[in-house]
Amino acid sequence: MSDTDITLQVGAPAPEAAYKRRSPWALMIRRFKKNKRALVGFWMVVAFVGLAAFAPWIAPYDPIEQNMNVILQPPSAAHFFGTDEYGRDIFSRIMYGSQISLMIGIVGVMISVVLGVGLGTLSGYFGGRTDMFIMRMMDIFMAFPSFLLALAIVSVLGPGMINVMIAIGIFSVPTFARISRSAVIAVKNKEYIEAAKSMGASHSRIIIKHVIPNSVAPIIVLSTMRIATAILTASGLSFLGMGAQPPTPEWGAMLSTGREYLRTAPHVSTIPGLAIMFMVLAFNMLGDGLRDALDPKMKL
Image (cartoon, rainbow, N blue to C red; front, top):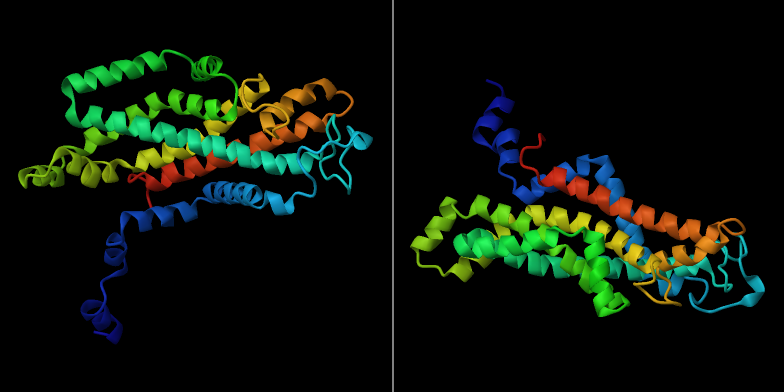
């Protein structure tokens, strides 16, 4: 027997055994790194976040400052993306607009997560009448198209970014509730849950310490992809005049005002439209990658 064979028998475990002993999150990261499309989406999201975070220092002009001497100028060295109908620098407005889009998307999804996961967890864990009541309420919300429901909520509350975030948070609740309910039902009868019950743990402790942490994977994936939906919905509401109000540099509002100049200055609406497309694409690609990485049935 060679020295190498002795080392493998007596020393560290075989590579396969060591690999199986890795934590689920380590395996998830390994799978994620192998997905090139997911990595592209991740770095695109990082770029948008960096653009939003450093906009006050990178933007060459004030996003709402008007200069009637340079209205509707095409892209140039002085104005990378050109100027709009009021002579405002579109490049600066795009950078500041990324702050608004990310804020609306993240805050709106956070509202959905808190409400949806809370309701879905209660529904799946307790079942019975609680499950019946919560799910029938979610069915009522899901009977309405998402965008029309958001539009109706904003119409009642009034236009504005805060109301848009509330509307986005509410219309996404049923989706999070259903996903959370399914995940909770899958784990609530596991051995460790039964052991916690036999030791006298309260329902709240079991839910917080065991149920939610072990059913969080699909929520992470859905949250990432819902940010893309939230950004697209917010842009649509602003396009209709129900979201951010002028002179706020919101991409949907910029796209709306640029419609009048499609023939003479197409860059006014084209560039905000491309910004929306790339940000939505980035979060969708990231969400797809996370879904594949968190799927325990995926082959390594």
